[in-house]
Image (tube, rainbow, N blue to C red):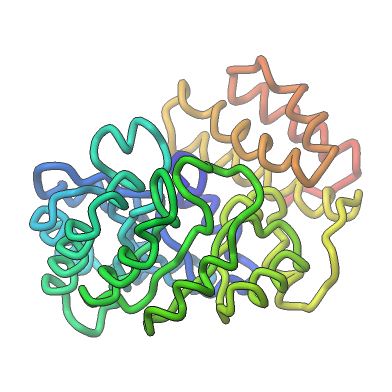
Length: 316
């Protein structure tokens, strides 16, 4: 999830230990081998054995359309310590698709096969190569063929977002299509799409037949979702107690962004996260409205700290 799930947010979302593994934001690969500095910037976990501070493995997510260049970059990031490489065939963003990246490649199963095959051949067999795809670009007619191409090229795991590119993020997610694909491939499948609550998680597993589920926007809207799933809780419900637990995370996230990014980029990150949190927390809507027009990072921090004081949350 470009521009949102950066190093700091990955660290926060995996801190409980209830996330099994995660991927970076996509690292765009075009015509050349990227400088080492790019990999360290996009994946600071390389300094810590390719894991978050809580020990969760992080795979390097690569996006591009040139097999040989993707293979070269995959080899480089593995040399630097990435525990796995994930290939992006699912991003629906128009700017990405125009550059022949992400979901647009679902029109070309042969190219997808070539990319996965080249990356698999370029890195040690002990290092997993995984991929993520949608059900298709315009429609689902190539869904099975694309999954078979990914499997035959050597990927060990395929995450399927259960919508086409054209469907974007409009509900519903077609989990039943993942079950159809399961009838034609034998590699490990992971279901993805429209999982917002523990109940969604259970239904997704039941309908798709998958033992594992990848959660994206649902974790941004409710950072405690993985905890609730692992602890067997019921339907998520926003509460003051959960919001109080979240306030220190917001403060920590914003401070880290202030430390890491130039001032002109800082204000956007916390607003992006709050825009997702609004889906699960009415309190986030109030805070978002309060900082909506703010561009001064320190003023935004004052608003977050005022929220902490309002709920009498002790400083970390």
